[in-house]
Image (cartoon, rainbow, N blue to C red):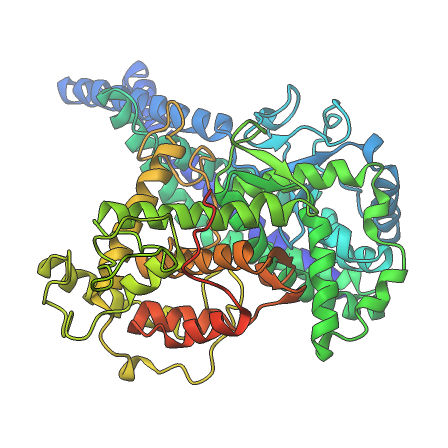
Length: 628
């Protein structure tokens, strides 16, 4: 009864959408009907006289203009290419067991089977209509869909009604086969209402209106075409607003009918599987922001992100007692076994994830190469720390900060050499510590110039630093070790004025990083500044994090310098933590208390906690380090 009720609600709303289309057609035909009446009346001798002749001429011209405009709008709505989610298409030859599972599920639900299967690098699943002629053979643009993983063949021709099943790739690696079947049951059940002719026609109409609005938003045309596009866009938006409520209720009815139909399939297992959905989402988000993002910024893309989700969630189950029992599921058959070549599919979805969330190129190249998890510490973590340390010292050189002398260098008699004028011996951590630690009386308040600073720049950076105090009060910088919330960190009300030297150095670092990023990622050829957001030329479509503030950049670079000093003096090694990203290992043990000490130096100019930590581990800050 619930299934029928939901389907009836959806069909009623679909008819309401189609009535809006019919009314728009009737309005377009109204001037033509009036012209026909006037012409018929004149030919029969009923409407005679000069006034009727003028009325016939005016109405006839108006009818032709309206019909022409309506025809253009209808043509754009019918021909405009609806948006398609970027996915990795899975041919049936590449996953026969997965196709068999989905078809068996459709048979149990008594609904049409999806016409094809595709994967998306996200923790979600849905049905997508790709029956528009632009979505069928010949194959869509590479910007919309990567070729089927594991083969050079494209998806077979789709049927007229059955949509494509899009599955979140993390589900295949983390979930077991039974759990995946339970999660996909309500999604596959949606093909039943989708096959209803009225619902399918209403969906095509709404998608056509949406595509027409997108097509008319392109301003890179001559003034005449821009004016025509503005009119088409206005009409399409007007009808789209009229359909909005009915289309939303129609989709709710379809979802309700699908959920009710799926109740009969693995209901008990679905409850357990929903818990795995939330867990997979948390692990996927953590993996992207803490592990993948630092690699993407280095021009490397991890080629096994989906396998990394399993490692991250297994590590979570080891640390968190709330996740106990999840690891025991790993003894069951994983859903990725339904693929013929899971490694190839994982690589394709990993590359797509880098494109969507970071804006990386569509293919590998000299500056955009894959990296395995075994190579991640050396190829990503070590390189990133040394590159950041080198950038920090370049900025210090630009600011005129002299390099610290070698304290072991002998000098004959006389006073001790002045560290600000003595010959430098190389990049050292001591140089950074000495510079960020204000000398007594050197800076007493923001607005007083430091050894090299400008009062106006000091005030500006100080004010901007105070705006972002909250971002440092809860979590350390992403991509570096020990970013847990330091206990007892003062709140915003008690936060002192920022260190003027840190503020100035942070500003120059931000400028340097922005300049390097702009030089490394030139805009794509032909891409305009006003490209619509649904155009996937404007990547990334889904940025993971907002741009880092200058103070976050400075904290990252100081942390990188400390890690380089630890690696070069006490033999520490870079490592990978599946939940926290790059980490520093000292004697094989993960360092977890570095972030609050670095923050104390950057924010307050207090190097005592960091110096005590260096002495405790035997790290010598006066020794030169190897830079990237």
